[in-house]
Amino acid sequence: MDTTTSHRQSADLDSARIRVSDAMHRGVITCPRDASLTDVAGLMSTHRVHCVVVTDESTHDDALWGIVSDLDLTAAGSVRHLADQTAGATAVTPLLMIAPDETVQRAAQLMTEHGTTHLVVVDDGGRPVGVISTLDVATALS
Image (cartoon, rainbow, N blue to C red; front, side):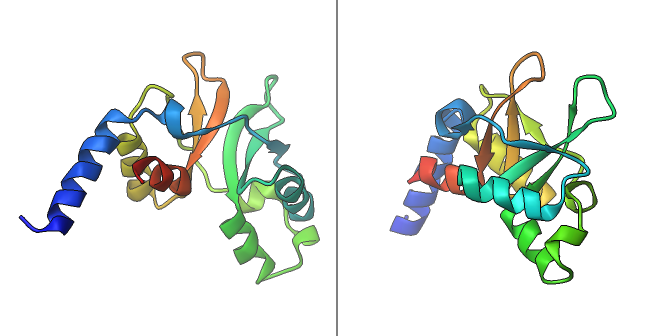
């Protein structure tokens, strides 16, 4: 067996053991669907995050609805001025969620299957407790 195969098998074993709760960033930055992308960019900059979770303010509990990543923001800015676009029109939906006790391997599978770079981590009651990104997965496996 060559070293590449051995390293790959070791990473597979690690990703099956490491929990999302060990790799995620705690806390979630949110905005309403009608927030301008300029406001979303400001939130990302202020909080130094790569995504903002969009909530549905039409529900009594501001239910989680979608997510806008820095990549989505960049793509939107290449088309039109950010002030003319909303989080709701840009957000990726449906929002993908994962439990903190799931494995990093499962998080990576979900990201790959859905072509996304972020998952919202939710507790047993469905409340957001953090975010896990592809960079978090890579860091956990390094």
